[in-house]
Structures are given as C-alpha cells and as structure tokens.
Image 1 (spheres, rainbow, N blue to C red):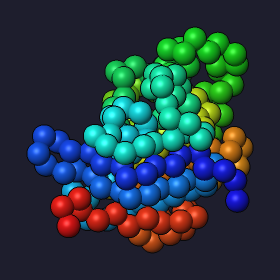
Image 2: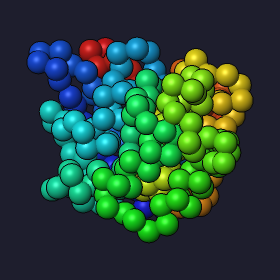
Image 3: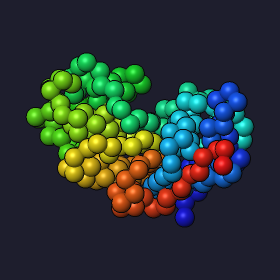
Image 4: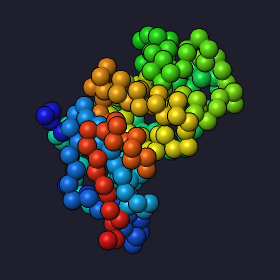
Length: 214
C-alpha cells in the first residue's frame, strides 16, 4: 500500500462551545478513494474543509505528505474541494473550467486541458464549451463544476455529496470521472455521500463518522 497522503491524529474542531468533529485517527493512502458516511451533524463536511486547508482544526495534528503544513496556501494548490451546491461563474462553460488555471497562471495547453476535463465528465467540448451557465441543466452544471476541479489535476479531490439530486446519467459520469482522475494522475479522492450504494461502487474504503457529542 502507498504511503498516506493525509494522516490525522486526535483531530477536533469546535464552533464556539459546540463540538463539530472528533476523529481519533485518519489515514488516507495516496491514490486511494475514501468514502465518508454518517448522520447529519457528524462533521463530514467539516472534515473535508480541514483536509482542503480551508479550516484549521481546534486541536490535533494533520499531516500532508508526511509533514505538518506550514503554508496552507501552498498546500491548497494541490487540493481542491467541490461542495454540494456548486457555484458557477456567470460566464461560459469554458471560462468556468479554465478559471482555476488562470488564477494559478498555468498557461500550458489550457484549451486541451479544458477539453480533456469536459470529456472526463461526459460533456462534449464542441457542444458545451461556449454554452453559458444558465443554459445548463442541474446535472450538467454539477459536471462543469467537477470539470473545473479536474482541469487542475489535483493531488487530492474532495467531493461533498457530488451526486445529490442528480439523474442517473450524471451520477454515472461523476463515478467514471473519479476513477479516471485516479487512473490518469494518481489523484486521491475523499467523497462524502448519503448514497451508500453509489459510494460502495467507487470507494476503496468507507469510514462511518459519528457525531462529536456522542
């Protein structure tokens, strides 16, 4: 088994006096797919934000590539998070997908990478690249949002309920894209989902979180 991309010890996060997350130990091997399940309020989305270096834990240690992260901004260049409710810029599909590359001043082969990312989520670049955000169905919008993360070729892709309220076709495409990201780039995935059957079909391991106050 490969070395852990993430490892956490006695991880905790509180919102004021309210405990939001308690996790004694977590190890996520590089190139693996970890599923997260559990009841509402058990800290699944909170854990994703911690792993994305968007939210510091209140206590505990989080290692990334075997080391504690001194520069969260630098670590965020290797990790990307897709929330349950995707936000699209009021622009074309191409402009949405290429946006992260522009922010990173990553100019190499942008057009080809956007086309690759759209194809991975099952959207024909020739048909969809110039569409505007309001011309997309809910499933298409979610797939564009995922493509905007895939185009970055991240070391870790964190997905929060990626198939919630989606049709069967979009659900299948997201499944395929997750597996392709791992195959193509060795991407590590951590996926929160209430769809246990779908999650069991994509994840190598499933961790069932419990509420922090139990």
